[in-house]
Length: 203
Image (tube, rainbow, N blue to C red; front, side):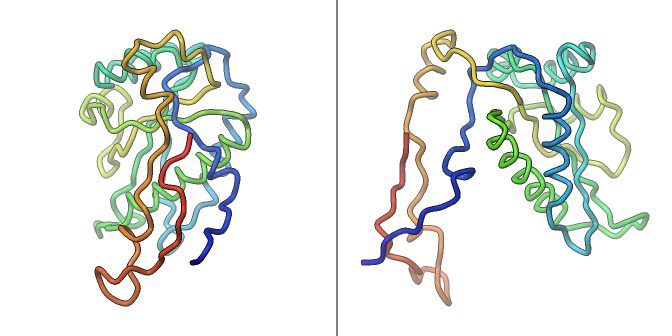
């Protein structure tokens, strides 16, 4: 039986949290996140990612506008994060009207870089699909041809005990991932590539 190789600690240690400290983020740390994101690969080096962030102390009106675009279930805890972020995809190649079919994929790659850098800096990022794209477009003045992808909270870990019980339970639940046998196929669909007895969940 094959043994699973150890993945990088930045991947192993990444966590999404709903328990945030209201400690402000240093500007240098925030810049490092976006610097990491901009070095992601993209089709034809198009770099379709754009990021709009709001620091609760530095851009309070924008912060409240972004917070208002979140679903109520996310606002409950996201309001304590010092920074809110919107990831955006440029939907056409260059100045043409040719659709960039892989724009969201490439924004995801850049976001993955951002997550790894955040983990390196002791920061936590929680990505959210629960938001109103229409409200985000309006309040943040996104131009035509740019589409919201996800929103995120960024900050330092706070006290989990301050969360409502239902959210507290989700914070301490094991991390669960499908086994490789369910997601990786060799040669053709359904042909399991690996039989590694790796962990599917981790605290």
